[in-house]
Image (cartoon, rainbow, N blue to C red):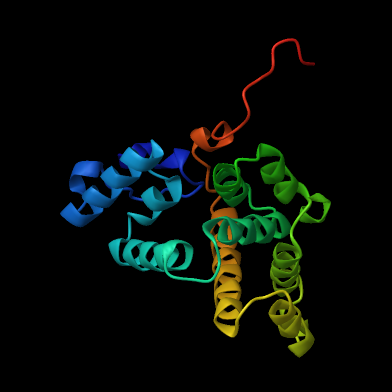
Length: 202
């Protein structure tokens, strides 16, 4: 991607390198994204103007979202959506709302979490997890032992609570970066993993 086209990614004029200008590991990483997702997420393209930041961001993201954890991939994406809903982050709601639809197989759940997770029919474990992520986002200074104990009572280990806290913190960071620079979500996110239209429906 050339510098001239970087305006499509963010409101900033970043010097986004062309694909052929990237180092070999980053080219392979972007090729893997293209193969698996059908696109290179705009957040990664934006970070590619600073290779060290791209590496740090990608490594932490992959560790949190795909590394060993007591949280399922769906649960991790649910946290991302609820945090992004509180912060009204258009980029992250588009990207992670799509992932919730993918992992759950339920486009309605994806929309409910985007709008108001309390309207969704959730398992007690998931509701406790999202209540914690919501409070940690809105009122981080008011997290107390009873909040952590509520997670333990729902079946989470202390290691799981650590992961919930880190995922929540990570998306509070990415929400703020994306909102600050008006990062545009890839258009593909809006149509992925939705139920097909029913003929004759209104």
